[in-house]
Length: 402
Image 1 (tube, rainbow, N blue to C red):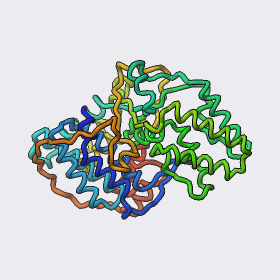
Image 2: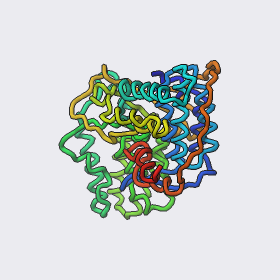
Image 3: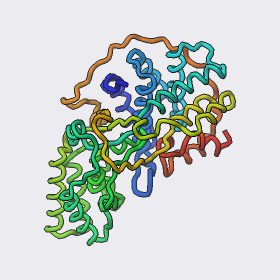
Image 4: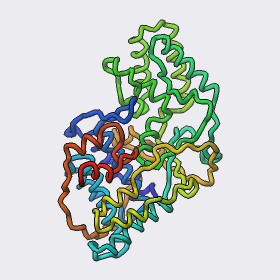
C-alpha cells in the first residue's frame, strides 16, 4: 500500500479543493450525532477520501492512479446524491479489479466471485483499521507506538475550563469521556471517520474553539476555524463565546490563557492529519462472519451492493485497553483541511507531480440506477454517515425494496 503517490498528486488536491469549495452544492448541514454537524461539501469530501484510501489498499498500483483520478473527476461532475456517489465509486473499484485480474467476461457469476474474493482478501483479510491522533505526537507514536496513558496535568487545565463554563450553565463543554477513569485507544474500521477524527483532533480543542453546540448561540462565529487550524479564528471564537456568557475579565483571561497554552503545546498551527493504520489481523477483525452468505448472493444482487456489504464499516469504535507497539502500525499523513481549502501544500509536505503511464480500462456496461434518491437521501444523510457508521448501502436498499 503506497498512499504517498496518490495523496501528493496535484490533481487529487485540485479535486478535493473543488469539492470543499463547490458553491453550486446546496450548503446543507448534516447531523452526524447528537452534538456534531458537518456540511454537505465536507460529507462529500470524507466519502471521496475514504474511497481513495480504499483504492490504495485494494488496487495498490501506481500506474492506475491517473485513470482513477480521471474517472473520479467524471463521477463528481455528474452525481446527484451521496448514495449515487458511493455506488459509482464502488463500480469504479470493481472495474479496476476486473482489469487487474484480466477478466474479460464481466457478467458471469464466476468472474464476479473472483472480484468479490479479491476485494475481500485485500480489504478485510489483509486490510486495516485506523486510529487518529494530532501530528504533534507523530514522532512519539513512531518510536513508542500508541499508548493509553493520559497527561493528568493537561486534564487539570481542561477541568478548569469546564468548571468556568459550567458556572455559566454551559455544561460539559469539554467532552465527558475526558473524565473517564478507564482509558482506551479508540479505533475504527471507517476511513472517513478516521479522517474526520484526524482533522478535528484533539477533539477537546475542536469543541471549545468551534464545534460545540453552544456556538450556535454566537452570531458570526467561524465554524471551520479549527478544521483549518486557524489560531486567530479559534481564539476569536472562544473570546466571543466568553463575551456571550458575560464572563468576568478574570474568567475570560483564564480561558484564553489555557487555550494559548494548549495550542502552543500541541503546535496546532502546524498540525496535519495523522492516522495509524493497524492490521486487521492484529485486532482479530480480519474476517467476516457472513462472507459465505454474501458470496451466495452473487447473481441475485448487483456486484456493487455485494462489495458494499464487504467494505462497509462495522466498527464505529473499537476500544483497545492495552498499548499498541510501533511495530504493528503504519502512520499515514493525509492532506490537511487547510491544504485542501486553499489548494496548496505546506512546505514540510511538498507535492510530487505524478507522471504515470496511461492504462486502458474497459468500462463496465452501465446499468440504470433504479433507486429512489428522495427517500434514500433522507435515510443516508441524517444521524449517521452513509457508509461509515454502520448504516450500510445494503440496509438502505433493503429498506427501499431495492
